[in-house]
Image (cartoon, rainbow, N blue to C red; front, side, top):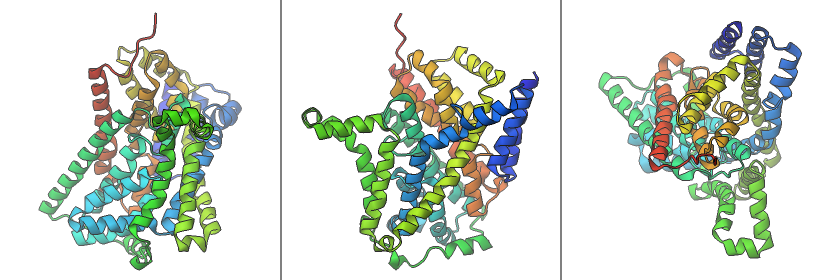
Length: 467
């Protein structure tokens, strides 16, 4: 009884401190200590093994995925410094116009994140441009936050195949699949997330106009708007797209080789590339991101003048997102050692639920506990995924459904991405969380359940174990 109360108390403390802006390292360690003490875990073991260096330890995760975070941050910094990201955003804005401000925000964020630019870079790059659009359209900021989150924090993060997102890579490296696993069901879920998300924010804008609600500027907006710079300094949009094409093209290369079976069988170089990419689900997308960064150097003169500085700043930018994610995984590593977590795992697996619904429930709950989709997905893959494979869930379907499920209940109020987005835009949870909840929690949950329903209706995804 005390142990279960301790689990709840640790989780409540983590949520409370995250909402209060307490440093996530301190918050996660303090919450982990509460869990350890109330569950009778040996404190040195809990902190030095389960939290730090065990199978689900913070630094075990950081060491394993450091290269991907590093390369992603460098690519994002190169796209931002060269103003390629801004060029793409302005091109879409000029094409669609102010009346389509919400669609502009969603599409730009979706394009940039799918092309490999990390979420925080996209949000920080888009917001200064968004201020001008919101002012001209008289759009409430809460709806801009929701629309950009649809593009940057839902379907491109977990559902669409091929993206070098950490969620895609965690699933691939854990299950031995590739980044395109479960592609068609991911596209189905992405259409639901994008379609319902945009319907909700557009409907919200219509209601806002009818009640006279509009854009309210603050001092932070004026400071952020100064970051826009001179539009004449941006490269042409078609050149700005090239680095992202390089990233996605490199990731897709193994699939193209598979489509040309004779080549892969007769050409040792092609066969070698295919074998390497399939055996290195972390290194291969990291290489793609570095090639994209080098493409920025070749194409954009502003990058060539400061390449080492930009790459160095990108490397520094990778540290905090990596360690923030690692910190919540460390907390989860302690939680997984408790009798309460073992009882939860036994209950959810033993419950009379279809396997795919059980996957959804377990991945969702774990992500909700740590307030991180990537953290929750990593814990799920290390602790529960093997059991679902034994139950007959196909690895490709498990890859995609678990990734989509992790991106629902993760965005509760203590989610780091939600907090950071509100900080950048000068919003509070009271002002904007209702809309954020709908587009990043409720709609992804609907999309995941609809995907599972379609798979079950088609009889796809689960093969009963032999015997």
